[in-house]
Structure formats: C-alpha cells, structure tokens
Amino acid sequence: MNLEAVKLAAADNLWSALFPELMLAGLALLLLVLEIVLPKKHHVVIPDVASAGLLGTLIGLFINWNSSLIGAETFNGLIHHTHQGQMMRAFFMICALLVCQLGRLTLARQPMPKIEFYHIVLVVTAAMMLLAQSNHLLMLFVVLETLTIGLYILVSYHRTSTASLEAGLKYLLMGALSSGILLFGIVLLYGVAGNPALPAHSDNAMYYPELTRFLEGNRDNFVAGLGIVLVLVGVGFKIGAFPFQIWVPDVYQGAPTPVTAFLAVASKAAGFAVLMALCGKDGVFASYQALTTPVLTVMAAATIIFGNLAALTQHNVKRLIGLSGVSHAGFLLLGVVASATSVLATNAIYFYLFAYLIASFAVFGVMTHLAGPDDSDQDLDHYAGLAKESPFLAGVLAVGLGSLAGIPPLAGFMGKFLVFVAAYQSGARWLLAIAAAGVVVSIFYYFGWIKAAFFETWTPPADGAPTRPARTPVTWVTGCALGFLALASVFFGFYQGPFGQFLALK
Image (cartoon, rainbow, N blue to C red; front, side):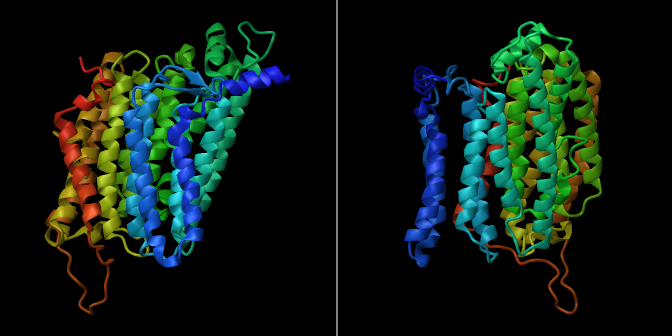
C-alpha cells in the first residue's frame, strides 16, 4: 500500500463518530489511574465516577441523537451509523449503569478488587456498542471477542467461589468453541466470495455490502451456504439458543448476580443486533432466506420449548432466570424469522429488548438484595415472606416477573404482542402457536416465584441456625432505580410513544 492510499484510508477515520465509545474507553482508563493516585480511603468515589461518566455519555448521546452521520459509513466501511445503532448504544449504556449499581451491592459482600470490575464493564460496554454498528466481518469478530474476553473475567470474578470459577471455565470453553465455529464460517464466506472464478466476486469480501452483492449473485453456492450456517451457529451460542444453550444455567448460577444480569440482557441483545444485521429484511444474508428462515424457525421453536420446559423444574432462581432467558431468545428469534417479510418485526424486536431490559433488571435488583456471600445459592425458599418483610422489593419483583411472563398491561406483554403480530403477518402460524403455548407455560414458573414471595411464610429452624442469607438494606439510590424500572414497565405497557420513531404500529 503506497503513502497516498494510507492517507486516503486515514482521512476516513472520523474519530468524533465514535465519541461515546472513546469516552467509555477513556473513563475505564481513568478509573485505574484514580485507583493509583487517590488515597485508599477515597477509593469509594471511583464507582461514582464510573456511573457519572456513563450517565454523562448517555446524555450526550441523546443530545446528538439525530447526528448528521446517520446513514454514513466511517473507518473505510468498518462502521455504519444508523438509528438502530444509536438505540443499541443507549441500550448498552443503560445496562452498564444498572450493572454498576448492582455491582456496588455485590462487591460490598466480597473481599474482591472492586475498581477492576467497573473498568471491565466499561470496556465490554464499548465493545457491544461497536458490535451493534459493525459493517464488516473482521470488525464483527474483533469486537465480539473483545466483549467475550471481558465477560470471561466477569463471570469468574468471585475468584474465592468455586461456583464462579467453574462458571468462568465453562463459559471460556463454550465461548472458545463458538468463536472457532464463527471464525470458520467467516473464513468460508471470505474465501468463496473472493474467488475470481465466481460471478460478483470481490476483493473486499468481508465488507457487508460487497458480501451481500456476492450472495445475491450466487444464491445456490454450497460453500457460501455452509459458511452462513456456521456463522449462525456461532451467534446461536452467544444468544443461548437451542441446541447451543447448554452453558446457560451453570454460567448464570455461578456468575456474580450483576454479571448474570449483564449476560442475560446486554450480551443477548448484542447477539440479536448481529443477527438483525445478517438475517433481517435487508441483511447480508437476505438472498439466502430459503436457507436461513428454516434454520432460524426450527431454532426458535426448539428454544421456546426447551427454555420453558426446563425452567419448570428449577428451584434455584438464577438457573430459573437463565432458562427463562433461553425462552426469551426463542421469542426474539420468532421476530427475526418474521423480519424477512413483516415491516413491524424489526421494530418489535427492539421494543421487546427494551421491555426485557426493564423487567430483567428489576428482578435482578431484587435478587441482588436477597443474595448472600455465596452468590450462587439463591433458592425460591429464600423469597418466602418477602412481601411482609419488604413490600417494596416484593412489589418490584412482581412487576418484573409479570412483565417477563407477558401479563397485561405491562411492557413485556406489549413486546410479545408486537412480535406475535409480526409473526402472524409473516405467515409463521405454527411457530406462533408454539410461542403462545410457551407463554402459558412460563406463567407457571414465574407465578410460582411470585407465590413464594407473597403467599408463603418463612419459618426459622428450631435451633436458630440461619438457612437463608440476610437481606441487604435498600439504599435510596437503588430504591429509586428499582422503583423507576417497575414504573417504566407499567408506563410502556400503556404508552409506546417514545419508541414511535422505531415502531410501525399501524
């Protein structure tokens, strides 16, 4: 490459376009510097710096929401700036803010390094934001591995806990396997799309528009089809879809509760952002819908069935929420299948993700307050009598679980309703029937959890030995956050106006 080519490439590196991501990266480094330069007694302010920086960056994103770069590509096509990308940026920063708040409660109970936790959360969040805007397979793989490596560390962060270390090892092994499969699929696509013997070949085959052009000109290529399937398998591991969900219950149980929340909401949403870019109506694999639609349809049906039936037998709430999250991945896959023909599907998926964020973090917030030093031991019996001991936490739990179950008039109901309407429009009637049955089954385990909190009484053992962890007091900050999440679930169940620019409700 000559000097002029290098200058031309550098001219397209518009760093201001990545201002939110750069802010988070700089903030992550600042936390480490503050840990070194501040006296130890002042380290308590560092989590506040992380939260304030996240909040300020989020506000800045909203101020510059309709950026002039929307629709443009930067960094020589690696990044594509869209309204959906802006929305996912906000999504991931909201998740990070809530994870940081829950992390305060969890880390206070553990003799663990604390500043590094917030540092890794910020780095992983920036990677997720880049992932949602990726426009190149190389960019996709690099940022996907960046966030995955960060999650490996976070899952095993409680290094004195056998369960956390075991969860980290299992996640590492399954993550490495999925990354290898994904990379193999990318290599096949790159190789076949760059083959000069085939029509519409390209020298830049990892660039989404060029790969799309090649696939449109070679609709029956076996190697391309195999590469697409392997890429979908790799992404299927990341979102916990059947039959790639085997790691979910063990990892969710062993990971610290804030990290479980991060995995359940943000990591899953990042996977679906990738799926929509690849398999949506105008996605890279759109010309191979004859292949991708059956694969995703079977995957969605099996994921809904497995997730709901497996959750029925769980007594540990972290495993329960993990397996119920598998079923939610199935509902979202239903929307991905419908997006091939329904104009409502894409926007319905994004609303579903926000409804899932609100409800899930409400539930995880309550779980964090009820967890003890052994974060993996969270049983349904621990919730007995919660309504009498803390009506506020019990109310937040009921709203969160009701929204996850899809009970009207909560936001989760509207999310499922919109996805179901999109599936009906697309003609996926039998898959819609399975999804409806899945909702009915989910009511049993979600309401079993509510029943434990409201209608069961905890009786201390006769010898006075504690059989459940002590409740963590609700601070005013956490109380406001949980109250806001509960109210938001109710509000967005009635009124979806703020999402109007994304939702085609007509």
